[in-house]
Image (cartoon, rainbow, N blue to C red; front, side):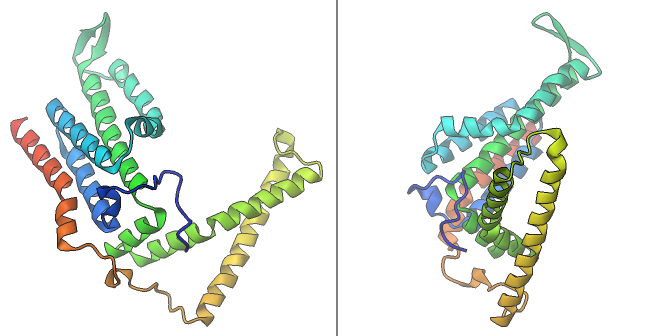
Length: 256
């Protein structure tokens, strides 16, 4: 699995966040997200504090607000669902700009948008500062089930191969007069997908047999015992944001 397998969200630059080990960043992101989810929806000030923490990390990671906002549009379907809650919700009604809206629906919409946006931004910061390979290594060091990390590793390694194979098959279909943009040509497209699956299965079997012949025993090397594992100082540095977030969440629970 070469270093060239960087995903489209990764931003290659030098920053304190980029230099942190992946396992520390993954753990920090998970704890931060849990703190956000555990915060009562009525504690508006707490979400402002979380947004400030995200902004500080983004500045340290040299990730611009425009890049974050553009990529966070992935949550747009959930935002559209949240917009409908004030109109569809039951319970007490309040007047907002001449509209009779549900109070519970307004709180529910705010809860979805605020927590969802913060979770998406935290995930984007993790993805923009950590390569896909390092994400898998970090999960492995955090004792994620190795069968999952192995599947992810091989998927990453051979994804480009499968994409190239699919592209060649499409060129072959088009060169023979097949253009799968029409409904009546769906059968040919489905046959191509089936052929790609069979080729991927056969290739996977050949790769597995080749690995067995080279001493593969069903487990990848224990990378958490190798160099690059997070030190105590790096864990302490990475824990700054989740500790602050947990403190904000605990305060919000007590005050609400």
